[in-house]
Length: 403
Image 1 (cartoon, helix red, strand yellow):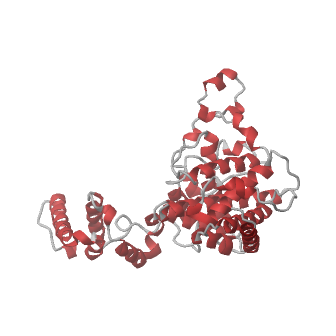
Image 2 (cartoon, rainbow, N blue to C red):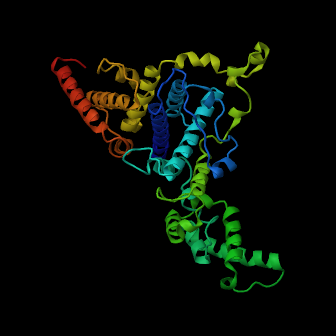
Image 3 (spheres, rainbow, N blue to C red):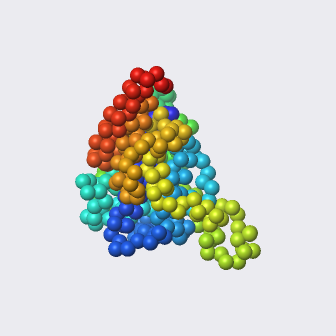
């Protein structure tokens, strides 16, 4: 698996863990919970609402319980870990996929209002949002696009040209600038140094957009220009410490280009609220979700499977295989029922450490460092204890001649 595909999957895992933290936090604040309890999801960010057709809540996702949501996320994750562009089977799956973005927007707004999502990290949701944008979307969106956003000088523009064609393209660029000026004003152009910055920026933008090599621009020069021009020209947030609901709204709109770009899930009512059998019969399978709900009723089962999948993938990365999960979850631990996120994370970390050590599966540094050092450092002890037990088990197997 190439590095960029690994990072995309790690970001999806981060967004799902953030959503689980949101559900757990909301449920902890309730005095009484019923089995069909559904946490209220409502985004108030005006920038987000102005550029997002889905609205302040998410139809279909808001119609089901938290337990169902967790079960659907589990199915989505198992699909995305195998095929990132896999089509999702129902409107509920698509809405739940999009809801990850909506939940992130809501939690980012809470952090901006000084309501912490993570007890040890006041920038937890904002950091995940920016990292996800960089890994799932386009880093230009977060830091400024080199020829769309910045007021480039001629020398700036030349620095962006592909190194293997730089000399040839520099000549083409200067000719393009002169010809464009003469077409626009029907007279002889002055020295390029005398062009107004705004007019020059428009010509340079046109030159790059019309090229067939824009995908090969000099990435070192991109980074230097982003550093040179800085946050002044960035529409979105440029660091976790960025203030302003508007900038963060724009950042999450940018991320929408990867998650939820297709909002077809809002185009029809699902069968949950249709009493007329003839109407239900006419619905495409995509909007028939009621028949799926039965398998997402047991919180202990759906939470455990999702959390084990998340934790195990974060720890093994490229070495993940869906077939490992059954053996992983069969590793014995405490017999008590585990229904809270934190307890489930601990069990998953222990079992993952055990299974990896017993099966000699190496760690993935990217996911492991984020999960055990930044997000949930309390899990490190569970993971290391599992590793120790797994090594002991593997040694005993060798001594008895097993495989």
